[in-house]
Image (tube, rainbow, N blue to C red):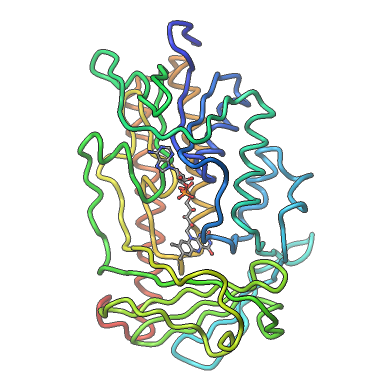
Length: 341
Ligand SMILES: Cc1cc2nc3c(=O)[nH]c(=O)nc-3n(C[C@H](O)[C@H](O)[C@H](O)COP(=O)(O)OP(=O)(O)OC[C@H]3O[C@@H](n4cnc5c(N)ncnc54)[C@H](O)[C@@H]3O)c2cc1C
C-alpha cells in the first residue's frame, strides 16, 4: 500500500543498469520511486558486451523501440581460444534466427535506461551521493544524501562494487574465488578481425579479451592469475592509439551474506559479482533489479511477510550465483588454472 508519510515508496541508490531496471520495474507497477546517482550524468565504464538474454529484458522494460539508438554492433557468438585451437562459438538460434549479443557504449546505454525511468515518473537525482541510512523503527526508512534526506518504505542498494548498503549495515561479502584483478583499456583505430565478434584467449596463466565496442573503438581486458596485475594489450590491438589510461578493477567473485531484509534489497553487483568471463554482469544487473521490483511490489502490497520475501530473493540470488560460479570454475580448470584447482 502506498504510504504518504514517506517521500517515496522506493529509493534506489545507484543509476547503473541494476538501479535503473529496479526503478523502471517499480514505477511500471505504480510505485513512487526516487533514484539517486552520485555522478552528474551517465559515465563511460566497462561492461559493453551484452549477452543475448539482455534484449528480451530490455523489451520488458519498454526499451525495444529505442535500443537501436545505442547498439553499436551485434554478434552471433564469440571467438574462443581456451586451451586449444581458436574456434567460433555461436550463441544459438531459434525460429526467429540466430541469437545475438549486443555492443553498447555504457554511457549511452545507462543514459537510455535513466531516460526510460524518468518517462515513467521516476525522480532521478544526479550528483546526489548517498551516505547514510535513515531508520524507521528497526528497519531502513530512507537514505541521507548529499542534498538532504529522502524517506522511503524500501531502500535498494544498486551501487555496484561500492556495496554501499552492505558496508553501512556491516553485511560481509566474502571472496568466493582467488583474488582476481582485471586490467582494461580502450584503443582507437581499425582491427577488422575484431569487427565480426569478440575474442577470448586463455591459458594456465590468465586470459585476454578484446571486442569492438563502437565504430573504431576496441576494449581489451586481461587477468593474470596469482600475479600482480599487469595489463596485456592483445597482439592484434597493439599499434592502435590508446584512448585514455589503462585501468584496474577488482573482479574477485563475491556474494553478500544477506542480499535483502525487511525494508531493503541489494541488486546487481552490490549483491553478487563474478569476473567478466561470466559475460552475465549487465544481464544479472537487469534481471536482479526486475526480480527485486516484483518482490518489492508484493511486499508493499502486504502479500507476504517481508522476511519471507527477503529470504526468497536471497535464495534466488544464491541459486544463480552458485550455478554460474560452478560453470566458471570448470571453465578455468579446463585451461589448467592452478588457483582454481
Ligand atoms: C573490466 C570489466 C569488464 C566488464 N565487461 C563486461 C561485459 O563485457 N559484459 C557485461 O555484461 N558485464 C561486464 N562487466 C561487469 C559489468 O560492468 C557490471 O556487472 C555492471 O555494470 C553492474 O551493474 P550495476 O548497476 O550493478 O553497477 P554499476 O554499473 O557499477 O552502477 C553502480 C552505480 O552506482 C553509483 N553509486 C555508487 N555509490 C553510490 C552512492 N553512494 N550514492 C549514489 N550513487 C552511487 C555509481 O556511480 C554507478 O553509477 C565488466 C566489469 C569489468 C570490471
